[in-house]
Figure 1 (cartoon, rainbow, N blue to C red):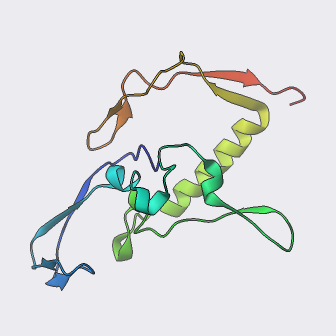
Figure 2: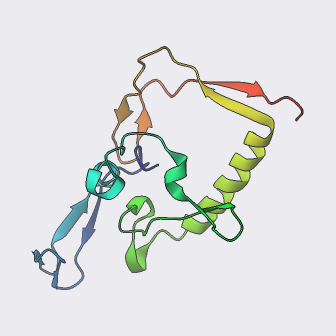
Length: 145
């Protein structure tokens, strides 16, 4: 969702006069647009390897137990569910459902990208985004499941 957020841009209206941390003045009633799609590609937020799919980017090893644990980014760096007092009410439920479904599926199946070498998905940016032609995958049963 970092590279392909379901809502790639969003706009808010200022309820009061305000000043951004960089000094930008925002007057009451002004519209401010932000771009989760672009923010997910910022090298200064995600590093030189921003374009790589690296699930370990969200993991940290617990030194005492040696186990990996999830480490989320703050909602202003990763604004897929928006941020601040009007953050998406369904965020926690979405995360819970996603974890349960993904764990259940991956316990029994392997999901392998099924496209030719050099295939690059084409992102179609609308209010809610999608991949042109979908994202082809092959489902393989895990042995012993």
